[in-house]
Image 1 (cartoon, one colour):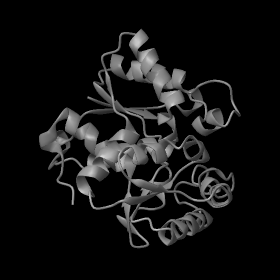
Image 2 (spheres, helix red, strand yellow; image 1 turned 180 degrees about the horizontal axis):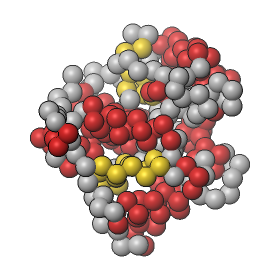
Image 3 (cartoon, helix red, strand yellow; image 1 turned 135 degrees about the horizontal axis):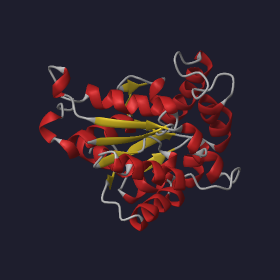
Image 4 (cartoon, one colour; image 1 turned 30 degrees about the vertical axis):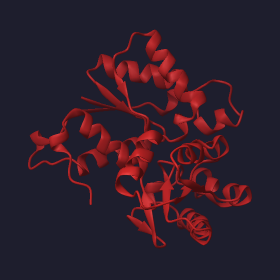
Length: 251
């Protein structure tokens, strides 16, 4: 059974579940895979606020507890639809806590899966843009992973990150976290400004490196660049882990 740590943010958990459905070969209800979504946003501190030193409690403790509860409820493989939660400081704590508890659940690593996906499906691409929260940006979560695997990361300037990208996600009036369905046009406008910058600086593809961003950027291409959606990548890998025969071909 698939387990999903929801609430990080809440719509991201729903979006991961939807992507699982969308990537599953099924002709009737019973053909779909069993999945558990535990959406407990009140239990998990904001990942970016923790990485920026604005809150003291590592959200990894709560995430590990939720994963443990998913396992007790029957989940055998789990995904966390939050890129920032995969920062070493948070993700390593989750793994340590699960180890202490004697957990046998398989926890996928969203960033590693996304890089592997690019290597398999887009081996000709060399320069890859990244849009993310400021927590992911400052931790260089994707930049380091891309560099380690032979790619060149293209990221916004710090000014552009803090003026356009992060507010597109977090702004209390128009950010995607506050206005998810429908999203506010200002959030999309901000992201498009950053996307133009990535394109102008040679990016051939762009990683939508915050799980809120694919709620706005829904196409497979954006401004002539390949759009890489880590939520979709994670969904496909979760399906593959449970039953590879159920996975739709990628095109």
